[in-house]
Image (cartoon, rainbow, N blue to C red):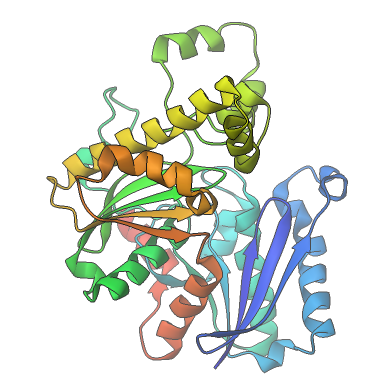
Length: 358
């Protein structure tokens, strides 16, 4: 079976063609910042992005009719359990009327639906960032009316967890795992028997990352809110100008490591502090799992760093065996999610799922 996979990001749109489990073609379509700067909303980029995707496919010799299904990254849709979903009218509505703000990944389902409708084939999405399987006690924050939310690298976390389960020779649904995605953002999650029951979400909790603040001292944050900075500028500061960047003025972790090895004391303390915070988050998730942990999984781009992974391991290696899966498995995860449906698994209904949660 031939699948088209679509995965839009902030500055690129990745596409791939899979023949069953094998990648037959891939392309990363870059979008220069000046090219995107003129769009007031992310959804306004849709005509441009879809045209470029169709052009790339045409140049590679693929037409919509040559596919059996189209599968996309999910985007910031409403909170739903993990799984493969049909891209129905409600998905499209929620992308144009986003419940949690805009993100480039939300463009994928619209492009997928357009191409799939033309070819009269299924349009699917798998494990969006808003996957929510939190246990009730994990939602309590400490202030009534302010509930903890689930936003994390669900697609890669679930894919890596299933891959690790295969390597361990056990079903994913039988294991307790702590998965740490370390990239531009960080998410640390407790996977209990196939469900993510707690997570330090990628938007505003846990360890700092390359450009995100993570958890901050509350009183200092309140003071910053009333220092004259606008809400828009504060959100930008916390999400794009915080973390490693705020200390070292770089978004490149490889540069941080190079500077540390050349004797830069500032780079060394930030390198160690980020590993220290990741380790604390892992320890907290171990407690969530009652310290019955089968493995700790380190994934994402930063997991390529032997030194950084060793620094984390020095704190948490007594909790459970540590397995590394550098990079990300997102395109393969999307393909596998679609294949499960094409081979007989019933896809979930997004509209019915969110109706049940209302």
